[in-house]
Length: 299
Image (cartoon, rainbow, N blue to C red; front, side, top):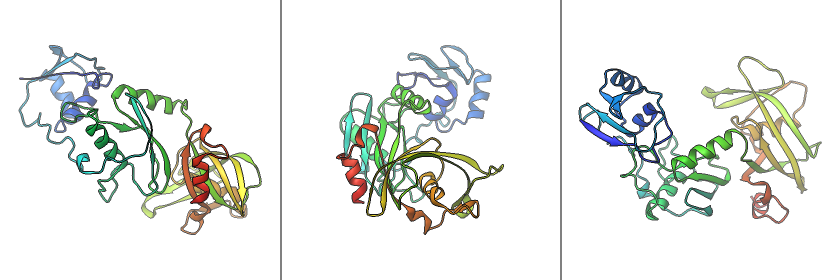
């Protein structure tokens, strides 16, 4: 028999979700079966997969050591092997905000790049003594928002499970405003507007098609913008993505200036250049002298 106690960072999640994180060899169907047969008990009694855990709860396992092997955790690239240097904008005991540079990925991609933003953050917290993977059963520091490799800007990381849940909920409820600074070629007919279109993603062909007609295959995209400044035939926009779709800023920019003759537009290598740079910011950082605004023009 093996016994573990639920910690503060483990509390608040479903029992089955916690167990799949703590023990990679336990699948969700297997957990349900083992709970039904009372080979996994919570606080000495039979439990259900959807029970929410509290700090101090005790799991008892009547299972083989093989099933309870935790060697699968942190099998991805070891964060301790990457440099810990990050540009921290704000930090307290719960969260960390950093400025991600253009060219860095936030998570490992298809190239299995180990030098990612989240790995740098983990390494930084580990060196500061704020994160010890050996003492955690299910939690790892996590990002609350993501931006593309070729986009720079503010990324929020949660240092504990409670902060991660709170921030994710605030983002879902749109209590936390996320804006982009975007330099585009040309001038827009309106200083501010909300663009509506319909986007179909063709994953196999690595492209998207946008249209003014709703079909069963496409999804609505809503993009709100305002022009902050025009200079040399280019425009600096503040963009609020009311929906989050693939290439939405680029697509919305093309849609705003497209010829209405065809009723549809396709994202290609040439038209993608219509949006030349993006940078995530906060409303207070978009003043005329803000570093983010100057950085967007200089790209």
